[in-house]
Image (cartoon, rainbow, N blue to C red; front, side):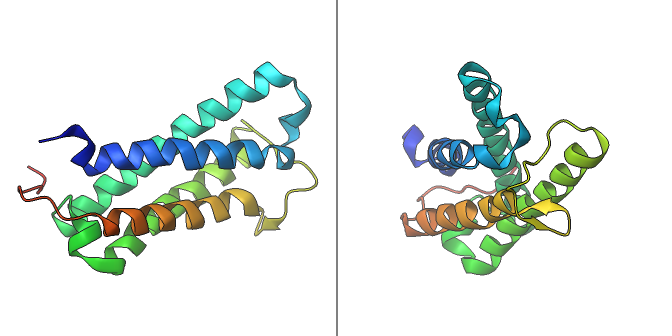
Length: 149
């Protein structure tokens, strides 16, 4: 089996690229945007790594729900919505917890809010997972069994 045919590898690769771009583009919406280049680079790379962990967790949750790691090609968009919803649900909780309770980060005044949650991270977890599901659905299903053990 080639490593690039493993769905998680494709997810990680595309997830790093798309989330990394998104994290840097949404920087002006966070209060720490003026803390200096090195801090911003470190912070956004750290956030990108966290985003990839959330993607993987959402992928595996969806794999468990549908009892196959091939859910993007076998189960259709219903499974895709489970994937998107699990990442979005965690993001809503994390944004609320980290901005209200832990105060790990804060929004800049420019951040549009939806019920107190930043619009940029909400859109991130609607747009990027949708793109990833579309990309994963386009690949040919593997010939070997990918059911979780």
